[in-house]
Amino acid sequence: MKIIIKIVCLIVFTNFSLQLNAQKIYATKTGQLFFNASGGIEKIAAVNNQVDSKFKDVDGQIIIGVLIKGFKFENQLMEDHFNENYMESSQFPKAEFKGYIKNVKEIDFSKDGKYPANFEGTLTIHGVAQKVTTTGQIEIAQGKPTITGEFSVKIKDFGIKGLYIGEKIANEAKIRVNCKYQN
Image (spheres, one colour):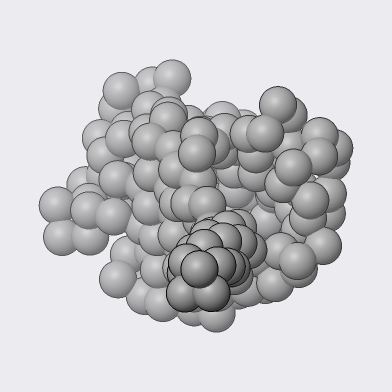
């Protein structure tokens, strides 16, 4: 009888420990990334609705990836110039952020609400990797998180060259991210 009680206790304790250490991985393939590099009279802005992202609630590890050719402009010619002359998307097809939500322990994923989030990691665009730190927000609604944030990048810091940078195209591009995750 003592052996049976010990086995039952071991099973209960093991199950309880596994539940405490359980992590959730949230993912989306339909996030949005907007950018605006308008520098003159022309609007130079695009959206990509195919952002692929995953993050873990336990340690805050996050990856956000986007195919460059997925950016859609109002003007097809501008989209062609973006892909061929500036981003060279055949040679550098993807941009990506790999890093951490530094304050993930302060976010209650079981409670609806809005939480400030601090992001730190490496942003790779046009084959050039740069360390970045930025802030954003994580909103929990019915157990599902949405990450939003805005930041700027200096275009030349990522090796992007072009005739109109600094004239028609701004020196800095404003980036806005909106990812609704599933678990």
